[in-house]
Length: 251
Image (cartoon, rainbow, N blue to C red; front, top):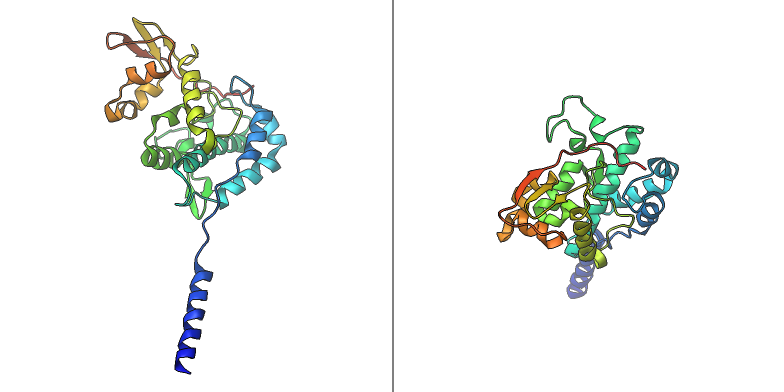
């Protein structure tokens, strides 16, 4: 009798434990966001914010999906990276819509901009799982910190003209490497973003602001530029940085 009782108690205990184990969530399906990007972003990466506003119900449903399904440890590195890149770009669009119309993302929030404190990127208007987050948290606290891949700087779009092109498709794990490399090629070979000649290069501020990222693991700004640019530079090339155009990336 005792053996039967003990067995029954063990089965009940195990059943209770199983009930309390939270199942690992499947990676987010970004197809809804992909459809919106194809509809409202042109080949140059300019955004039809009025169109996003008209499709706000579908857009908010995608953001809700992101909010309720944070990356799990069972997801691959590429699945997690694709999630966070899409989240950054989508929530940037959400931030613009929250304040639309605006001429620049920098017009949002406090007139006194203290980095990581009062800028639009520091505002904790994002909920991922049970955590309130900012765009800074996604970029600096998650993507740069956890994944150590400078190519993210070619993918994250801060709603400004001098940013990289916003892809009119979602990032996905199966295409992530090709997408990031394509973003790098597009960015380096766009004369509005980088002006290259062998003896003189005017580079995007990204190569100055994130110099530490480009120099990690034996790399350098020159090596990263030459990885994607059709016009090559070398150690003797005089490098300066272009002024950053913060005007809204609107069609």
